[in-house]
Length: 405
Image (cartoon, rainbow, N blue to C red):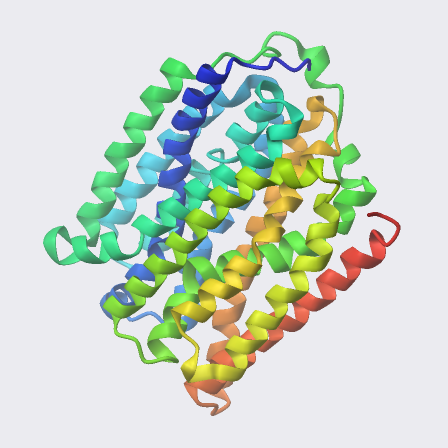
């Protein structure tokens, strides 16, 4: 498919419309961290239940990534994003009405399915509508929107809880989703290959999964990226409450400032990336040098234990920002005809990894406590297992790209 670079004003407005949808997706993704104390009490959840509930979103999200790649390449973001968001409305309303853990979990999976196109749809469109040198900036600024959604999922949600309750919060979110659907149908351009099946068949999913660079990023996407998201959207909150001794309000406030930090970090990162690239510093080098710093910051959290709080998690997530370079790097390593399939394939790795890590961290905590370990010790053991997996994934990536700059 040929690129169709849009005028700057139209590109900015399209970015805004997509950003609204992705904001809601992020809000729904991270809200369980803020609601975890309340949901744990109301539904008598174990750590494993809580991890599974939060991970249900990612399970639904991940299950749609492969078909989503084909749908986006054929029909484009306008049709696919708006259609999937209808499922998100059903999921949010069902969550608001849920009376049991199973009801919450099924609704959470539906929400994940419904918002699964909110990043991949825009990134597929940007691959066609934006110049190559701005792909990393567009990706970073979408992640800035992600952080904005995370920000609103923390302290603002905590403030609203005693006023309208968590069920009405989900009711309001469903109304916002409807507004985004209308904006998408009105303002997102039509897709140039909707009536051209030959172009959309110009590459297969096999081409993506056989690609050497893509394969080298598989462990990073599954474990490093997925685990970092799992901590940011769930386990940082329980750590602050159950290990560091924060109150629920203090935990929500801590998550708020973590995500405010990431919001500004992604804005600055997106702004300077094209400038860094022009100076000859490629994404590969940034990832190779940056990731070990994030491992050290995670190790510091584990060592500090009860003394590790919001500031330390903010540093860990901030130093993990170089992980976000993998997604645009994957997209740029394929032709535009494979934009949807390459992006959704990597996104599948991230969200399968997030589901596995969210649930897995909870299961390890429960297992350690079953063996008689103290809660603080159980959290530290679980995070240590995650750190070891991250280091192994990084070494695999380095070995597979040892000749790359």
